[in-house]
Image (cartoon, rainbow, N blue to C red; front, top):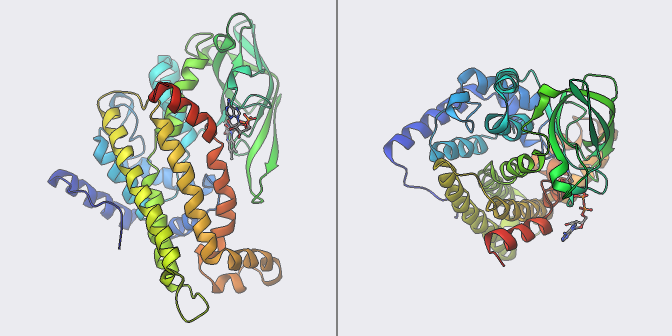
Length: 406
Ligand SMILES: Cc1cc2nc3c(=O)[nH]c(=O)nc-3n(C[C@H](O)[C@H](O)[C@H](O)COP(=O)(O)OP(=O)(O)OC[C@H]3O[C@@H](n4cnc5c(N)ncnc54)[C@H](O)[C@@H]3O)c2cc1C
C-alpha cells in the first residue's frame, strides 16, 4: 500500500518528530480532532481554530514561520514540515492563517516598529482576528483595477469602497486591505496597504452563501472609514509590491501535501469498509484503487516540491513565483480527492444532509461515518481552491511568464 513518503530522517529530526507526536497525543483534545474531521469549509470556524491557536501559543509553537527576532520558533525547514505533517496526521484543525501566515510576515518585512510591537502580539494571542480585503467586484484576477479609494485627510486617510469574497469578515475585527491613493501612471503604482479596525462606523459586512450552503465569505462595505496614517503599511503606493509578497505566502507559505496525504489515507480505509453493494468493498474495485493510487503519487510529488520550496525559504529566500506551482497542483488535487470521496459515499452523505431536519443530529446521520456526512459539502467547497488566492488560469500565466519565462 502506498503512503506518505517515508523520509530517512536524521536523528535530531526524529527526536523532534517524536516530541511533536507526544505533544499532539497529550494536548490536542478529541473534540478538536472531531471538529476538524467534520469541517467542510476551507477555513475552520474561529471557535475551533482559536482554541487550537491558544494551545499552540501556550506551548510557544504558534509563530513557526515567523523570523526568530519576532518570536519565531527557530525551527529548520524540515522541522516546520514535520510539524505540519504531524498536525495533519493527528487531524489538528486549521489555524486562523490570515493574521498568522499572511499579515504577520508582511508586518515583519514592511511594518514600522510600532506596527510590529502593537499588532504581532495580538495576532499571536488571538485578540485580533483578521480578514483580507483585496478583491472587489471587477477586481479579482485584475486586482490592479481596484477602486476602493483612500483619500488623505489630516493625520490619516478616509476609505470608501466595497470588498468582495472577504473570508470570515463576519468574525473579524480587523481587515488588511488595498486601497487606491493615486490615479496617475500605471494602476499598480497608486495602490497602498492599510490596516483597518472594523469596529467603527462605516464598516458593514453582508454575508454571501456559497454553493455548499455555508457562510464563509462576505461583502465588506467601507463608507468614510478612518484609518490613522500610522496604519499605512510601507510607503504610499507600495501596496502592490506588498500584496505580491503576501500572495506568495498565501499560495506557497503552507504545506498542502500533508493534509492531502492524510485525507487520502482516510479515504483508503473508509473505502475498504464501505460496501460496494455486491459483497465487496469500494476499495476492491480496481478502477477506484487505481484512481486513489494516482492521487497518492501526485500528492507525494507535491510533498517533494513543497520540501524543495521550504529549503529555499530556509536559505532566506522568498517563496517566489514557484508558489504558484504548489497552489495550482494542490488546488487540482484537493478537488480530485474530494470528488473521489463523493464517489465512495457522497450519495449517502447528501441523503443524510437532507434527512437531518427530519431526524435531528442523532438520527440516521449518526449511524454513518463523519466522512460520509462531509463528503458532499467538502467537494462543493473544494471548487473554491481553483479561485481564491488567484485562479488556476492566473497561476498558469504566472508560471509561464516568471518560472518558465516563455
Ligand atoms: C471561497 C473564496 C474565498 C475568497 N476569499 C477572499 C478573501 O478573503 N479576500 C479577498 O480579497 N479575496 C478573496 N477571494 C477572491 C478571489 O481572490 C477572487 O475570486 C479571484 O482572484 C478571482 O477573481 P474574480 O472572482 O473577480 O473572477 P474573475 O477575475 O472575473 O475571473 C473569472 C474567470 O475568468 C478567468 N480569467 C480572468 N482573467 C484571466 C486572464 N487574464 N487569463 C485567463 N483567464 C482569466 C478566471 O480564471 C476565472 O475563471 C475569495 C474567493 C473565493 C471563491
